[in-house]
Image (tube, rainbow, N blue to C red; front, side, top):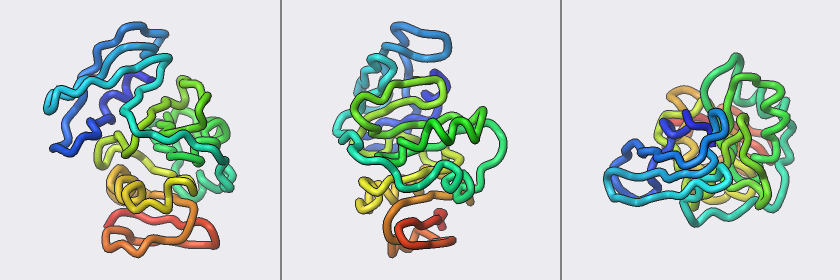
Length: 193
């Protein structure tokens, strides 16, 4: 887990959003290889092992995204370095291609395939709900395995910075909090209202 990601993570328990406190065990450059994340609100401790922060309840992806990295980049509308993009479920398979297209952008890989390694470009987290703060991501991509669940779509919309985009595989949601900007068979792009 890239150390600066700590500023964007939140406890997944249902309480007011609050920063997490990192107690690193082993560091490998800027990567936290082992340690603990603590929540000052509820006292929960999340272990980081082999670079992976496991919040519990995450189901590893067992499929690949149908979207090409070039398509994801265009749909997100991201240019230039800096910030984070969250990739959820099967969308995590696009991370290597996106990292090549977007140097200097970091990726949060939420529930990737079981043996996906943590790296400088992509920090692996496992969780049953999106463990990132509201309005903290330059974009969010929701894979087909998570896009059918309204909770993942809602948290993706909340995690994107104001006016920035969410790309999801599947049919556009009928949500009051989502402005659908474009849709094609099997994919839609939207932003939080």
